[in-house]
Amino acid sequence: MADFAVIYSPAFLAHDTGSFHPENAGRLTAIVAALEKVSWVDHLDWREPTPVAQRADVDTLIAQLHNPRYVRALREIAHTGGGHIDGDTVVSEESYAVAQLAVSAWLDGVDYVLETGQSAFVLARPPGHHAVRDRGMGFCLFSNAAIAAHYALNQSTINRVAILDWDVHHGNGTQALVEGNAAIAYCSLHQLPAYPGTGHSSETGFHQNVLNLPMPPGSASDTYQMQFEQKVIPFLKAFNPDLLIISAGYDANAADPLANINLNPEDYGTFTQQCLSVTDQILFGLEGGYDYDALSQSVLATISARLGL
Image (cartoon, rainbow, N blue to C red; front, side):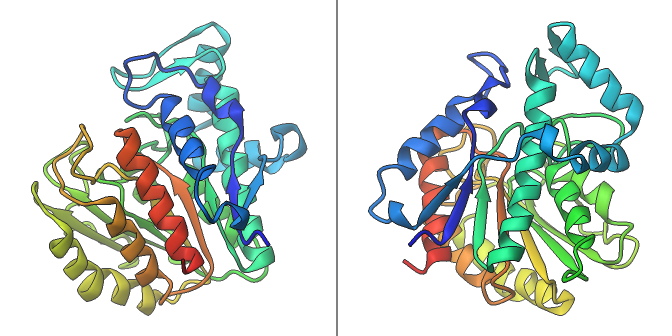
């Protein structure tokens, strides 16, 4: 019987960043191909995200966390054929609609976890953790994890939500959009110095609800493991969340071309196992990861660890 949801749609491939952009559709097709070949494929519950037209809360939540002027500008760029927000962040003709659908998928993921007690992986793009209130940046258009956390707090069974961001880059957008809410905790392990240059340990949130763990270039599994044992898990357990959202970026792999951290795909399975000591209610959502093989194997390690395989 399927007991882990994968929320995915081929529509996510329509966010066209160009053949040579690292955040491209091939990332998702590689992960899907790998998942379809695993021996435990029967454990996966493949789900299409709810169409945006059937979720009025998508646009409402986007407008709550992002400046409506930015939202209108993003829609206009897409509707007029596309362009660039900055040198790294591409908007194609379909990007606005795809970014809306990605938000819907993250909300579906929250619903699935809360309704079933199982976990879900939101296999969507564009990613979101760099998107701030007034603009997208760093390949990101809407702040998916932050939106999902605020949405979860609207549910009657949820009083506290934690976000763990293990992407190699600091989630400056997520932090900015949640650090003022005492009911949301944010923890990030990330390379520093690196893009976007934020995430210093001195950044602790307005309610001591932020834990930033900058990792020096060259850090490997043993250093990450020590941080998980001594800081990440104690911080999360002390916050005692009803839901844990993981911004699951996999660009801290040694094979990844955009950073200089030396993790291996199996490390993400270890991290996932440790997170289960905090809560069983975990939602995973894709952020970065740009080496197809390392990315795919890391997703497999994450899901298999959550399944206890």
